[in-house]
Amino acid sequence: MTDPGYPPPPPPYPGPLYDPAAPYGRHPVTGEPFSDKSKVIAGLLQLLGLFGLVGVGRIYLGYTGLGIAQLLVGLLTCGIGAIIWGIVDAVLILTDRVRDPHGRPLRDGT
Image: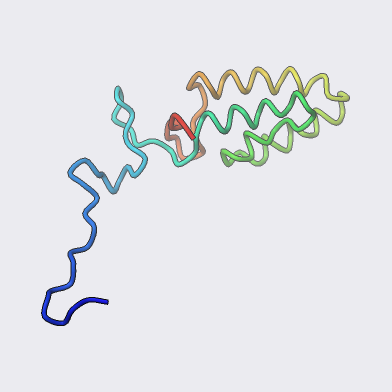
């Protein structure tokens, strides 16, 4: 509770380096705003293909059609195609070869 004799506290200030157009920061080389999706989480989810759940990383990124296609390939090939596709796709995600559906680079970290 505030004392009526004092003014209310100022609202929190996000800081001098905050950019509302890029709440997750900007790519250090290109200056593009980072995605709200993490490449580490997407890559690890894609590696779930080793356990038969391929496509989860792509669904997390927003590529639902591709994720479902990966799940179907996994079912039709008894998991062999899913394991290979999942590993290759996880490597592509973790090495910055995949962007989110809006064309933004995936952010580092979780």
